[in-house]
Length: 397
Image (cartoon, rainbow, N blue to C red):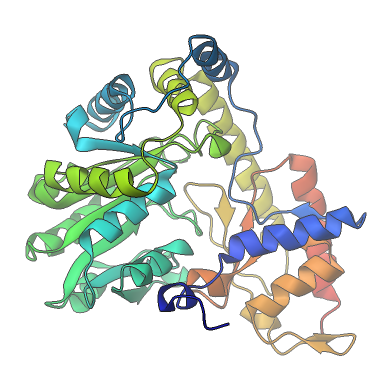
């Protein structure tokens, strides 16, 4: 079909959503599928947040909000940044959007021109390169393997920067690997970026509160980057609010204004009720956030231990998010029932069909030797899922 734009034709489908759909289709056929492909908490949104949404409906918050979001929410985000991260951003430097995904896309579309290069460490979240392509920019991928805990080095960053480099997208804690950059590692990257004042930093911190090292470190803490620092965050992961669709960015005023201008033309402000729920999330008790974090950490240790017992899988022990990213290339070239596994995409389909476990191939994340498994599900599901994976892999020869 050649009626579609070149812009659309250049994009790939989101593999995470594709696998989730395939899993749902099998379930609809009555197959007992355990879905480890979905990047969302399995917890219900905390009650005090839901109550705030109900009150907002009763109070008739049913009209358009400002494009950048309600002022009380932006003030609460500003206060969160100050108290939790020791960062100063005024409410007019914050733009609320329909999820952190839109916030990232807003930034890229507002800043990147045709031919501009955007550095993306791999493994990366599936949408980063596609967003850069949408803006007619050029993704420049830096590969960081399991041997370096999936984290790029200062030397790699220095080598990747060219006169065309517009920005780098950093994600810590990481989707898909769960890796977390330490303060010293971030400082080494900041030192490189300090020598390149035209390079902006987009820091995706959506998994900030799902970390197992006690404290989140943001690259925004380094003063030399302040004038070109864009922080992206939201309520989806740590407050179990994926469907509420509220994310936000904090940036220099000129960039925030540019993103407001862009958003004003294609979505306007995000859902008014969701914003009032998000306000309650930020100003209310954080007890549920910690309970969920503890549950994720327990599940991570359980799943890591079980996966480590499978010969042929190489798994690191991540420090955040809710993913494991085992290296599975030792199974490439093996077969079962006449089907040969060529890559992680084949392996993911095989595990779905033979083991009835849905996970996502590493190809989509720029790491074709790996699989992404989300442990955002019950302990019982995780034990059974890894058992099925082990049995299915054992049939390959």
